[in-house]
Length: 419
Image 1 (cartoon, rainbow, N blue to C red):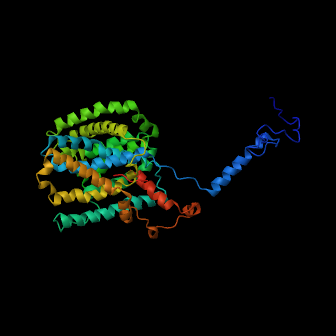
Image 2 (cartoon, rainbow, N blue to C red):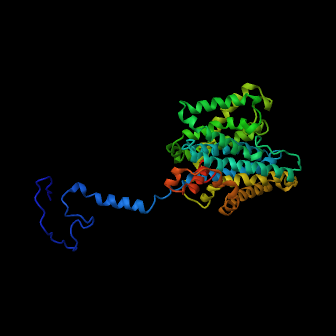
Image 3 (cartoon, one colour):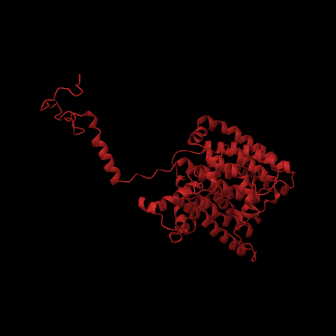
């Protein structure tokens, strides 16, 4: 049927015949008899505007893939700590330990960098950085110190915010890394520059222990890698081909780790010392830094390839990984202070499996919402009293407080937090 258009179109008849269903043609949008066809979309647009004014935009949904990755990585962290006292008696445990330590913290740090891409040093984000990273660092550094005094039998151990003890190094590192994010956004070759800094750190024994700067600098390339990654890079490693290729790669890594376990100093994987401090020549630091970065990158890709992308029973726990990370440290260290590994059964094959399962169960419980509610005062303090009111934030609404904490957590690896 031909339709007349333009200024001289024939006028429409005053009344249209009803079709068989009894509804006028065009009744769906309510303005069928209006001649200017360009104005037809006006009503839906107005309705959309009214809808948005009445109902604010929905909060962006969390990505199940990253929550799954964070949860699985934190489980491996806990298992690695559980395997540490078993390495001397079990070569298999030592091989698993080396393999996991090659990629579990790099994977966390890559995710932390990926979710730090929006950090721009604006007042709101700096505030969230302070409340979500700096304040928990202070609280847990003091708590760990008193725990060591009480459980570790060292009543004179000093409180020092410049010398992170055990797990708190990650918070200090994340604070520094995120502050440097604007720099990595403007340099031309961020990843090669970060690798160069890591290499120089590995051959510089005079850096010292303040804020665990050796770890901060040697792990820096993984954070910068996360900053430069894009969603399509994660999609690439999640393809079926990548999952299949990961099988022989991980198998080869396990075999190499089994061979290297009695021959290699595992302290290289902690990245807290220079080569000279590990009784190696300076050039070995450069070689090991670059070699371990390559190995870690391959295993991180394999890990991401196997992480499920759909929502599972543990997906929601990905929002509480930093809780599990910091809280399980008391049990991990307590097991040494209280000589839990002095018994014979943990050093049997069945005992090693049992210890592994216990570690996974404990870290899972520590990531749950009830535990988060109990310790939120330390992990996500609002501290409204400590900051000036932001006029722009007030103009947009004060709902940014809870969402902001979620975003900091998302970046630490993250809506949920990472370790």
